[in-house]
Length: 163
Image (tube, rainbow, N blue to C red; front, top):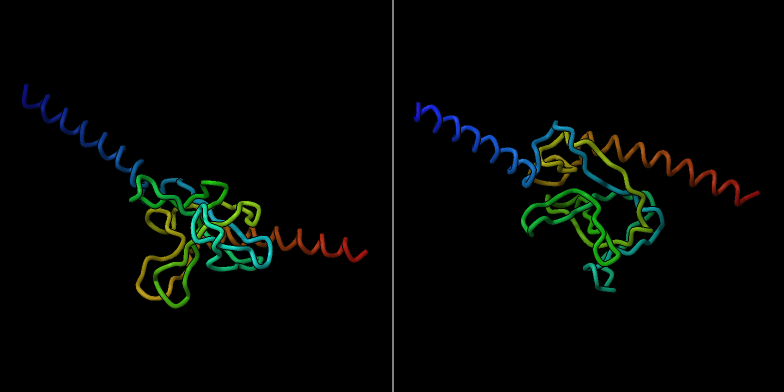
């Protein structure tokens, strides 16, 4: 009987550890988790070197998509927009490498959207592979839907300014 209790306690502890590790490390794809990306809403929007710097490392144009990037405990990447010092840390694919570009942007320069994590493990916005990155289907669908709404708004605003 004691052996049965030990086995049962061990199984319960392992199940609890699995839940805790899934919450800490991110659940595998397909568990209803969501992540965040954004569309740049103006031309020449600055991307800063870090959250407190005024040094501009890049400029992105209206319609460019990025993904939020937040570091949990300095080791776990969460793909979400978390404001720090008045900026979001973002990243976007480097067309020539598997290593993405990253930097910090002002929230006013971005229109956020959410995407489902069911297309890649750990909510990655692009397919994990060697070589140039390609965005995954879940990210593309959410991005395209948000971009369509923004383009409609931009064209209405442009036509109302012409009148």
